[in-house]
Image (tube, rainbow, N blue to C red):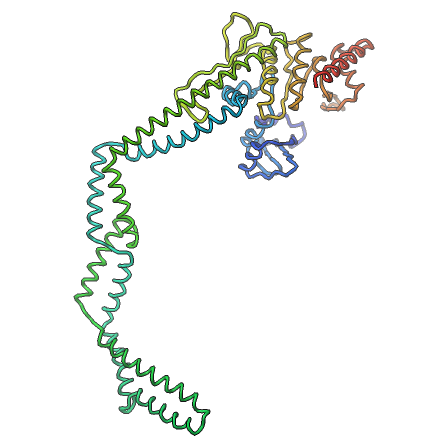
Length: 520
């Protein structure tokens, strides 16, 4: 269950001790815990928890073969087992568990109110977050407004357009290489217009095309060659015109380069100041305008938000009141059920109350603080369950609680470790009967020395210690019917089991079976 392991439990001469438990689970809550722990679980709903303790004090915890922490085992086991012993913890003694158990009994009516409250809480938190964002010191808001106004003005004045930096950089590159570009373009023009030995390239290609045309009139197979050369002559003539136009348009303007550099310096400065690309400066401007507008209208917005906050809070208070009424109404019937069970357990004067107080704050469960209260005797003050002093009283109270809350609690296995301390006779019989009621829906593992309780069980195991060759050994054995009767007789008679005690045990077992058959 995630408790502290002591290496003294390791058998002398051995290096380690291990304990393993196999569970059959059918609970979405447990499946979610396993998923959160990234632990695989099969469709057969089998869960295996294993702990290994080494002599060096190291402990290994495994769930379905995966290594986990002790804390994870504790979280998981808390949903699987409720261990109740004279000196052990149990979920029903934990006040934090009380509101959860009560709410399960309140059903869909309370669930609907919880859903409303959750929605109101969500909106309330959003409203408070926005109020916090725009509230604060008045002088601080004024200072921020002045800063925003200045930043908006300078960005608007700069008027930096998306893509402007790239366009200017490309233009600067062209201007800086103007002389070299004119030189290269002029060289190409000279080749095309002056050609070789004063014959322009275009004229030479045109002449060749004319000759090929004449040749094609004689030999048709040359026509394709003519068409290719003629096309080249036409394209070359077009290229000559375009190149000349390009050459005449080339500039080396130093003044324009200076203007571009000044503009780029402005862009670089704004990029550095606002820590973004030049293309994002327009978005930054819109963001600043939005914040400025919010601050300029902050008082109006705060008033609206405050009204909204008050309205949401009132709605939450109304829902909390309804939740309290539902809980109080259901608590009354639960109190009566538990007191009826306590009377069945020979506690005629016992009182059980569910205390519901209002907390200073509200949350997902409303504003109710719920705790189970108890007193065994008439006229005594009600006390929290955790302060019950008598072991016998505590055993019966816990059993009565489990009878009533059994179906509301998702825990599937209850371990009762000698909870019969301090009771006997008729009370023991009543405890046995109540335990059977719980066992209809829950698995109960009960360690007992009372024959009345043992007789009510469906299966009997005998645990005993024996000494062999100077070593102590503990064994557990599933008893057959006759063996179980004899063991119940041993509980009744002590060391010497007589025929009379066996007959009494047989009769006790028959009566227990009759009670179970009559109350199925």
